[in-house]
Amino acid sequence: MVIVTLQREKCIGCNYCAEFAPEYFRMSKKDGKSVLLRSIEKKGFHTIKTPLQDAFDPCEKAAKACPVNIISVKMV
Image (cartoon, rainbow, N blue to C red; front, side, top):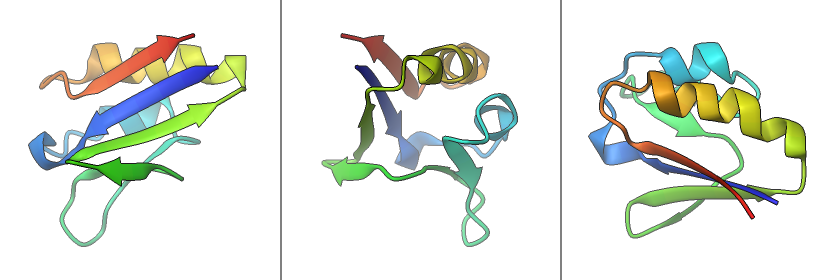
């Protein structure tokens, strides 16, 4: 299981996440911030849980590229 979390309010709109993991991240046309696709929002944290192991590498690259460190990726 791969768990990806985004703190969307802190996003600065750099677009790295959407470049590295376009199947999981998009940039909002409304406010220019990142959107974690198919996520559930709770207290400002947007989270997805997926059994797809191949989600880990692109999301990990997106997390490492994020200049404000608002993406976390865990494999459980």
